[in-house]
Length: 210
Image: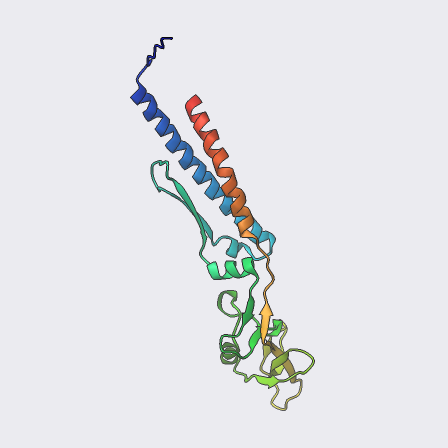
């Protein structure tokens, strides 16, 4: 038996075109995977009612930033990793100094940019001292002897005689709190990763046909 092998066309040019098609397919697939995962994570955060501001901390970037490569990669991250991580894992939170966690009540109000106030910050802002109240059957309290204003916030009483003054619970004191797990970021990441081979193959074939 005699076999006759011949090459038609420029094999080097064909291989180069194949590599270019692969580089484009991989880069396009990674870019799409990164954008899709960013969108999925943001949607998951808003569905969990954690707010659009927190959702917008999810960012994505494709490498290389310019050009195309067979080794293209996508990075998705959060600019608030501690907050996102806490809602993703549902950790048990304890006080760093081993005492109480102070949980603000609605009467405490909010600090700068909507952040929760600490007891010390609350005292400085309101000009009132907080008083400890121990409760055996429930969380102990930090209370203020003042009044509730029209917005439901604890403030100093205007009366010099004490008329209308009341004891307002400002903080609940608990030894620890279990944060509910409200996110499942790994689920979306695994789905995005599983879709990458199909995106690459589809892009590679379409690139060659085009």
